[in-house]
Length: 391
Image 1 (tube, rainbow, N blue to C red):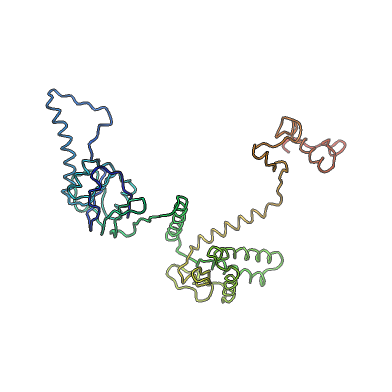
Image 2: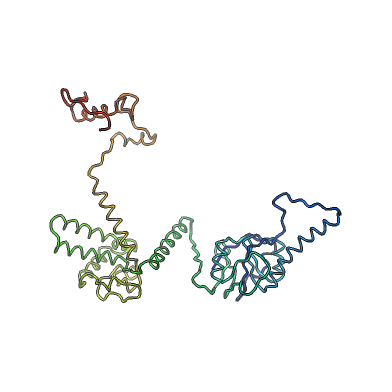
């Protein structure tokens, strides 16, 4: 577990920053002297009482510091500030301290080390203290991080991303977050996986081509062949991304799936821990060896539910696009000069809707008739006119 170096006071650089098997104390206590936020007033009758009041404040802060040291801790982390007095006091005692630690970091540290967040310095016992194998401060580039290695709870860890630009780091963070959420969803839902590396797309593509030739006729055959061809885009794109010869590798992949005994049986849509398929149905792109390999044996898995959802979304999008039978574009709206201003030219007299005059319906019909060589009167014939309104 790691957290960034926090704001420090005088004496921080002289602190010990390496401990083996330390005792860690997490606080939500302010360990510094500061002025009251509100107008505080103390009435005294004797000027000597002022010294007692100031000394009482010092006694309170020193009591808190002594209680922390007496508990036998080596590291003190607080969500609230630890001032210069507390920093130097802990430094003289051989402790490490850090104030203004974000609450999210304290929560993760508590989960990893077994420490319990305290709101008071009294009653500190061994069961509220955390521990780890090694605590140290390291520098990564311009950042200084405090690391806790080999914590009792190995399920809590910190991933440090480094890159040459903010855009690269942001993209890496989004990709890593997506991958973690996919694994989380897999573990929380039905734990069924299929092999990745384009193997499942190549398998379904090969099976659809067989069905198109043996079980479909007419337009259905053309639709199935087009869908099968579209599925090959995934393994082909993997080849391009890896710099492979897409034509050669795709030919090898088609040959491997053409020799399969049939579609994967119930056992081969594998659950976590099951054996892999015995035939070539999981053959996918091998970017390391510039060829194909058994993706399931190589540990390249994808959640079955995610794959089904992505295919359904792509199919629905294709159906939506194919359902559009006509698109109307105004030629005048393509004028670059008018696109910059955000205005379209008038198509008739001034006023009205988009320059169509006081009668938008009639003016539009007249313009269409004029383009087709017809009458500009807006009438279909003697005694018949265009219907106006919302009909």
